[in-house]
Length: 138
Image 1: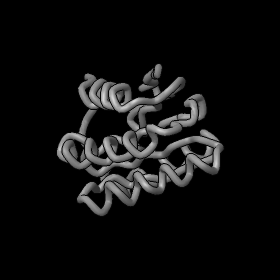
Image 2 (image 1 turned 90 degrees about the vertical axis):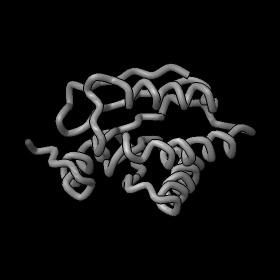
Image 3 (image 1 turned 60 degrees about the horizontal axis):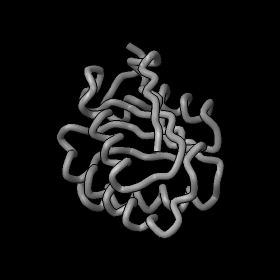
């Protein structure tokens, strides 16, 4: 799995473009790199463009459970932010909803929404960041 960070849209949000085959290890590395970056702060809004990600296949449940665990274990570092995901795939919607419910039921304050295109995701992040604890229109 490969990813790139575009922080030129700060303070509104950081965009993370992801492609390739996901795994538990690569997902953790991505999140560690993101939350450990110089530009990261708790409550930051993130647009994850996962439209280039291959279907998760048999590892789907392990990846989802590990992502949920990561967000719960790191909730202080992650904070109350907004996450917009972009993946025009109906199967991905179900995975993202499982993730959203999993983190909320376990105490994470992150607000997650799935979008079919990046422009709608960007608009939502820009207009709703205040509900996530960040004022993106600084």
